[in-house]
Amino acid sequence: MRTVDRVSVAAPLDRVFAVAADVERWPEFLAHYRWVRMRERSNNGGVVEMAAWRPFGVFRYPTWWLSEMEVDRSGHVVRYRHIGGITKGMDVEWKLEPRGGHVDVTIVHEWDGPRWPLISWIAANWVIGPVFIHGIASRTLAGVKRKAESS
Image (cartoon, rainbow, N blue to C red):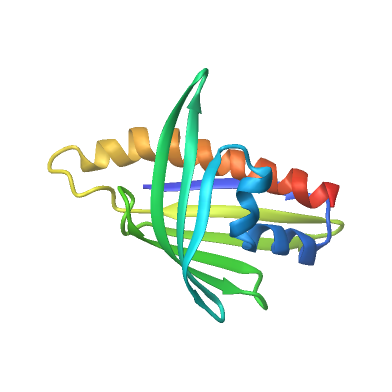
């Protein structure tokens, strides 16, 4: 399964990167995030626990995952490796690239799917990727864009 979400942000690269990499503050301006907690810290990231809602009209489905986070400040990239939750084994990369007066932010999620016999591929490619991952990532990018452009 591979999902790609993108947004163009009209703000300086350093500001956009600061908003994207400061995940502990996301629940302050991203209404769909229930919480973000750093379980372990390192010089360039650590282990982060995240929980979000995936809205379906008036209903909200709770999601949760645990990731190893790596922040590459010089390359303007944030990488995650999911180590807990239904998406264990997923690789995620946030890449920020300046384009004139804008910053293109791209999130790529790659995953072989859950370890469920017979339905793993279908679950990953028909439900989890397009419905849950894209649904949460697109809202996250929209919120990062709003925050960076309003700061």
